[in-house]
Length: 367
Image (cartoon, rainbow, N blue to C red; front, side):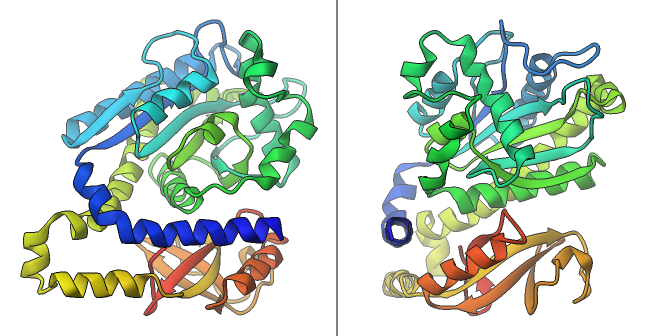
């Protein structure tokens, strides 16, 4: 009952956002992105045979920042660190929150214990409850940075990154930026796979402290496994780092383009008038936007169209899809009832742990 109430509250907040969006966009005319290269200083992060996570992610992060600065003059780029220094997790979030940032990108590398055979590939995380041991292990590794901080138990309200019980709190958290985060994470993952030719380990959810603390759409990217010899060689090269930075940049371009489309409706009255949209029509559109739409469960993305019996669908039927750029996005179910769609979500997550709710109006996705 409590979770359902929280979901209804978040839905209502979304409606209020639509109503107040004009004043918000009018006051804010610069987009701010925070790039967060993980670890640093006395915290080396994951260790390869001849490399350290902190060095690789700093290099990729700075390259990404330069690409954005050089190609988006209207974007303010901030770093949580741009040198080899240690920055506490809550300080990283504080930098982003104080700047009222619009997007937060945390960059990391993965590793496995040397006694185990290491996989390879990229994965992009959003805040949420880890639904597999692998996701929990990644969250534990990245959250363990707080052990380098003084009085971490008090600072993080008793959170211990090595105790599974500490992660129970993520079960009761609702991230109002989840859908935007998943959308951006999907763009990033697709670009890293298709442009940088990395092995796809999918978009996932897990309990990362740094994502919990920021008040904006946010992702955490694991660029690869430095415990894998072949992947470590790639991650260490200048060309590999440039390719990874460029792929994230291309995803940022897509995200920013959609952001600009939405804000442009509110901030450019001349364009609105040229399109024949009067102020009254705009008000009518806002009221219409507040009406319940068609809800579906998005559970899978694919670079190509899948057959109805494709194994990737895991027997889920009937399914539908819509096309976003060059990506096929698969959905299940259709209802205008928010309670019903939440019940459907639980069903789908039994097969696809990262499934989420999307809203359509007139056959087009709006949220």
